[in-house]
Image (cartoon, rainbow over all chains, first blue to last red; front, side):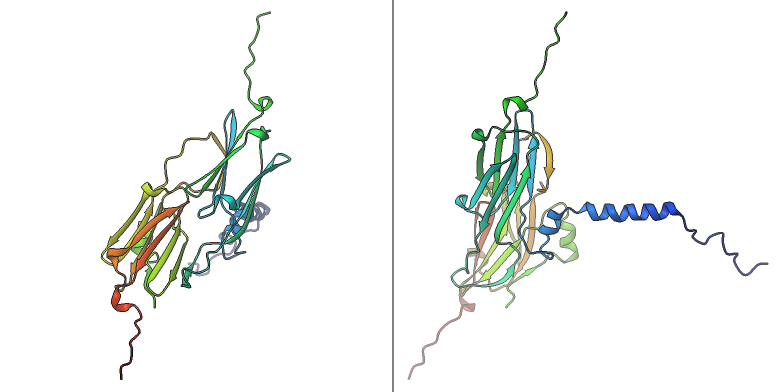
Length: 155
Length: 125
């Protein structure tokens, strides 16, 4: 009877593939959380990065940004070189009649989000509305950017 | 004085909150009231529920239905509803809680009952 287990059969062997897969997992983990995600977590920078959605259909692009508790006049929307910028500031209402804060989780201050648009838009037809704390920017595509059906002619 | 305790870390509340977003909250205390502000973007007056059960205050915000805007290219906003629970100090006059919502921020005003308000007593000769 053998009391000592033979070494070698179960010991982990070094494999170049394991190393490569390990590295790949590390890199995936690194890129899984984009910077905006980091920015949103208050522990990191304490900077307000409001979440943004971008939708596309055949006629238009729609951008939605969650901006609870702002004044309409404190939001700025601009288009520059095919990129849409939304910026502004949420002002801290200083104390409710001199009240003392004992829980402060909301973020205040300036924010700026810029998104490159995936299609050219008609700048003069852009509309922005602010309701229930959500900013919705509707950007109609230029005629050239809209998909077009081409009829096949019989020769 | 801790008048409103967050109950979200209690195991049963964590389970309750699955599938909900915990809204960011500011709470301020003044002489007569507590003011709670919760961020609930996409929630209108009709989507709001403020429930008081015994000493537990629960705020729930249902998002208004959104028309489809096409193919999502980026999605950072979570479409889930909001929910958060707090334990109220008995010193709060539950009958007089006032709620309003403006541009996605719920403001609850919770008045203190008369007996806990600071009172000045005049010294008589």
